[in-house]
Image (cartoon, rainbow, N blue to C red):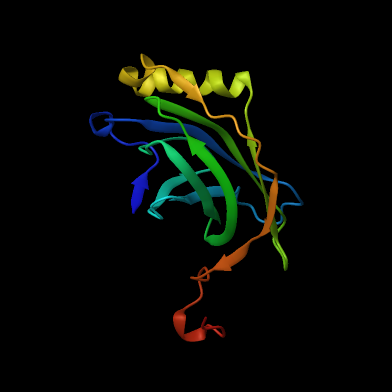
Length: 181
């Protein structure tokens, strides 16, 4: 199910999960485009229901309606202009029973383009990041700013996984493609 990263203020009812995504280059940059997180996918570990959260930003907040439970960040898609890459992950996280759960800043460190390209994923909790998120919440969703925010601190191991290129190839007509997978 596709879910916007920032729903309309009128659509926000019930418990929500807030956080921030950040995509950065970790190696030499051979492309003129900066990496952006196109979307990430999470799965409810109990019901196996899946959500695809559309971000389309290199640095962006998300407010998503997730109920209390255990979840798994299982996929992320990174774009650099017309180039797209996808990585399969297994990063567990939990959402509390409070009206607002804060899950930290999810940093995606994208390696240089090439064979065996990797992405390093880390989740950061610090006071400065929390203050920025609370300021965003106060400005964009005043009704949620009055609710108590529960920090969902967890110690995920930093994940480094392979990025795979995703079709379509940029600016290449379908007739001239050599690979069909």
